[in-house]
Image 1 (cartoon, rainbow, N blue to C red):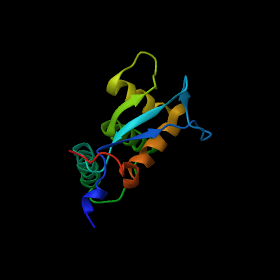
Image 2 (cartoon, one colour):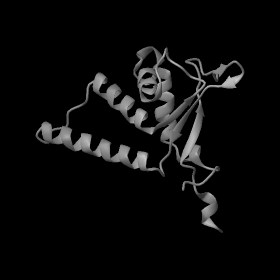
Image 3 (cartoon, one colour):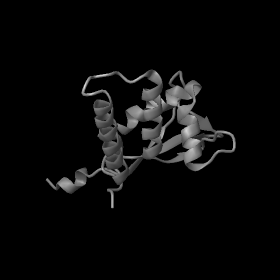
Image 4 (cartoon, one colour):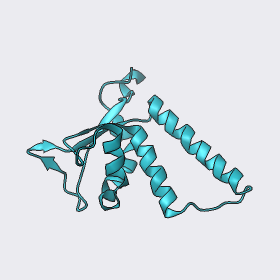
Length: 135
């Protein structure tokens, strides 16, 4: 078996669903978010960032396990997903663009279903399988 056929793509598109689970469309075009996957530099940077946060919490609390607040968990999840977002497709939020757009969507509590979908999507290698291998 040629294992190179199993290589994953650097990015993958997630079709965004509304809170009820219906895929979103904008004038007949799918609303999608393109994410960097587990084989990328961005994902490696995310893992480093998460480890650094964990070590900092451990040191700040003198080695005691202390749960993060809901606000801290949400802020970290937003920043993590912003790092892994390549681009939005057919999705706007006022006049925001680029990273500001991504952050605005992910940090809106009323759009929390998008943050949840994205967080789940990027954690599954299979979502990045079967396309163009990373360069």
